[in-house]
Length: 536
Image (tube, one colour):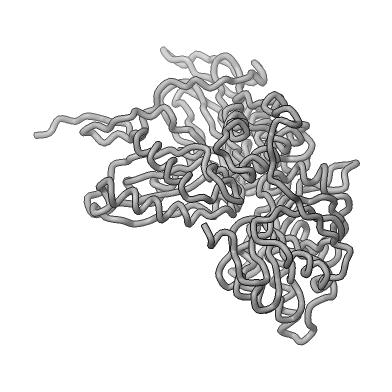
């Protein structure tokens, strides 16, 4: 008869995170028989959640910023790799001012907690954590992205970015440990689950499989990525939960070997092999090069003999996660980097991509397209003048106008269209954080709109489908790729005026008119049927 042995599936080592104390208040040790209980006032949870979301929306871990600096110092990095890395470091410096968030998609708030059995709050912890999240989203310049379903087909923005995803587990001990994540739609959409079999579990098959699947990530989620791959899992949902934790580097202290009882472990050798695969793709930090990923985490989990789930996901350039804890000593929050300027190089120390083509957007659309047509894909351009901004819901409404016989409005024919949705505008600023959204969500509209004279120059982030390339070749259109990630620096330096054109009731999904100056982008798809990403 087998002897019982309990093996925690996730068995982490010591935590070397640097924390800062928020307060010694709101905690008290109380006797209870022969035990002691840590009493935590619910106000501590509210305050902690508010501070965590505020910090993580503006600041980064020093290790992440160092990895961006490493790109600038690497002679093998492409010029475009270095350009993207420098823009992201500039963005981190702007967002560290705690006014403009680092990304305009300020994410879904996620809280994962481990609450010791000797911790007592006496309340619904999720309610108080939600209140803190509410305080920061409504009281600062973040964006509301959560849509409440009124019916199966009707939705309305909740106006607070709630509800949050909150999961709290009971564990032994008298401390309360939490992980706060704000996950944007771009990186969340690049989470994949594959139901495989034992046949995958050999070095040749596994590396071939991973090499194929990482290309599905594309650039829409703003690389360089922190890539996580999880092989195995007691269920599909557990595999994907582990992907999220691994991408946040929450599982870095896992053991590096397995055992006969089924503990999870990291495979450091496979991590290095996969990192090399990512560098060989040529995708780079969005526009060609070596730095598709900063790093890779590969976690092996136990599995049912009939199943072999594989999960793949990323944390993007908006690398937003922060640890917290409540102990006998007080309330603590992970110390993020408040001085990202120390990672910036000297102004002339970084060689950037060569010639930049300046495009005057005040010219007629035919002249703008004629100028773009002179240059090959991958050309870096600088845009100055008016653009219109429209994304998912606005595109759906414009399609309805075509179908009803109204046709497209003049503004979509006369100006480039930027796929984006701004965060709130701080007082004294022309714009809130205003980076590009994922282009692929608008692919199905392109041929229709271009056939009616609109969307002939598009600006967004990420790669696009063949149908967009074909439409551009058919109708003489262009897709320009903007750098995904530096939304704060775009708002501060490049966007000079913002006004609502149509559908103000849609909030950030409205149609906007903006004036830009020296807005950076790259030609990705041209009017001859060339697609930069298809080439690599």
